[in-house]
Image (tube, rainbow, N blue to C red; front, side):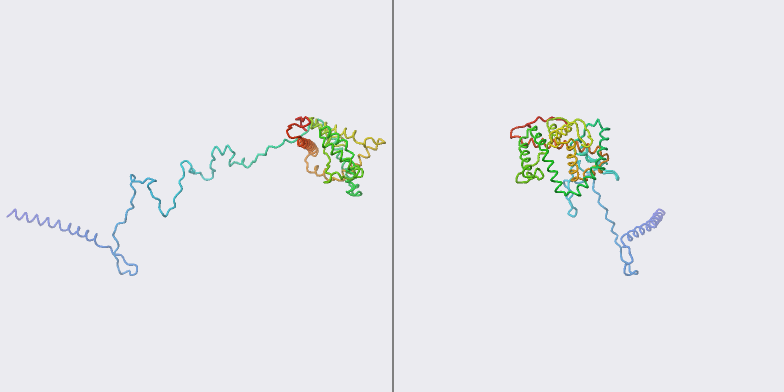
Length: 354
């Protein structure tokens, strides 16, 4: 009987301890299954159940199951990107810096430096200069001639040009040009330009007879086509290869060179004016010729002098360039007259500076 009572007491204790646990577990289950009531948007007194579904977790791809680029299909909404070959992708450049160019472009001169704005000048002919050992004397003679021009020759020529009309002055220039026929004829012969010598002879005859002693120039018209040969003795020496020597400025006569001084002497002896009497007649005639020529080109010397920093050097270089171009033009003219198959000029051309 005693054991039975102990057993019943033990069971009653177990029942009292287990009842609250069952109520708690049932309450947890009930709260888990019961929906949470929230006030509706339209009526604050009416409650609506809220969804208790847990938020869906974003599926992260397994590192071992990443698809290869070849197997992946492009999305329809996204445009297909062009494939970029390996090694051609541009590298990131820090802000404020310019990307470096390949070595090949650097060698070709493609740089972004300030030096890239510099354009090298094309290689052309070297400037023509004359040896000038007599520069002090030449500068003194240049100033003498300059003063003679502005103080005497220019005022007289301007007055002469106002009195004599231009057609008459052009006729006077044609007359003196016709008198210089011996110099041009001899120069053509010395250059072995026999066709030029024939044309110059025909020109002299036509202008003397039909041009009223050379005042007119009918031989230059298209009907006859006998142009004046632009030759002289100094040019002839240059075609044969003789260099100009040194630069010299003669008083009254102007700039020249040692080689072209031969031309001055040749013009003096070949001109009929040199044999006039009395002795001052040649100087008078040549003075009148200078006044007439100057009246037709007043302003040329002033323009050259005004545009030059050092007029002496500018005139010297201009003279040297003019003589060189005149000789080179004559060489080309003689080369064109060669028969086909011949490769040399009828004269031996040297390589000296013209």
